Amino acid sequence: MKRPKPERVGVVALRVVRQLKRDRRTIGLILFAPVVLMILFGYALSGEMTGVQLGLVDGGGHEPLRDYIASLDDFDILYLGSQSDAEKLISEGRLDGAVVIQPEEVGVLLDSSSLQISERVMAAVQTGASREMSIRTDSYPLIITRYIFGYDLEMIDTIGPAILGLVAFFFAFIIAAISFLRERTLGTLEKFMVSPLSRVEIVSGYILGFCLVAIIQSATTLLIVIYLFGVPMKGSPLDAFAIILLLGAGALALGSFVSNFARSEFQVVQFIPIVIIPQIVLCGVFWPVQSVPGFLRPISNILPLTYASDALRAIMLKGASLSQILPDLIFLGAFFMLMFIAATLMLKREVG
Image 1 (tube, helix red, strand yellow):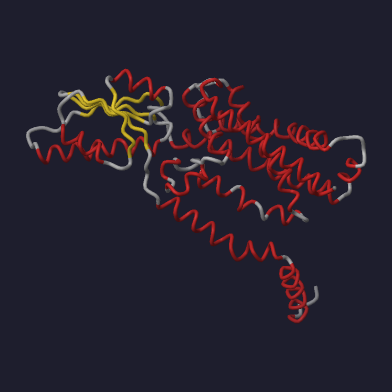
Image 2 (cartoon, helix red, strand yellow):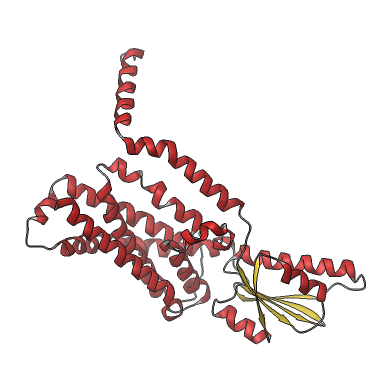
């Protein structure tokens, strides 16, 4: 083996630097993407939990505890008339929890499909009880905890459904973007464009073909999450599979659209920090959307993984049916149609 010469190594390094210098997109990614992502992570991880939907049933007594909970900015308080009303709204997903105050006890109703929110509610009740005891030293309020959902859930159970959606979205996006780009660079797409096929038929055919791969991938990841990691499946596996496929279809359409802006597979990879990482940070995968700072939540509300995570948690952890997660289905369907139309129009712009 010949001994490497520094000057030859320098020639190769200089060639790489010159290539990067001509690629403005790569320069922008190197300079600005880390800054944007670190700011995004910093704000998301340092944000205080707000916007927790908490029911409060005031049956009398424990005024210091009640006043403390009502004064917290973390909670959006909904005053209710009975414990049964609170249980119903939690079951429907309209409340994250509830506090039922009675003279003889304080009941805490929790939905542990999000452990972070449940822990925040419990922490607030316990702090309020401690403040009450500091005022009234004769007794400590009797706190009774009841889980409407998920009394035996662990962290992997609560984040498993969201990670399932993330994996499906990520690989569907990458497969579609790279494959569509390869078809363009190999000239296959141009052959289709001079055929009688319409642009809608071309994009539909590509997405349908990719869907066959997505079906196998989705089924595999779903089985791993359920049987290897033990994430419960209280709802229908077919309903969860339908959500994954709808999310995957949106990712395929998004990948087809994004491929129009890339000229190489390396440039496709550059879209990962822009498309994938914000969804990890802002869509409630590892921490609830309620912990995302308020000025970033509008972004969370337009990202498909937010709705897919919510739907998969509802099906797998609460046993919800498709009719009960209709708003999530509508958004995911609208996202797919929007990306499909955008991919079709960009195809027309590219070739025409």
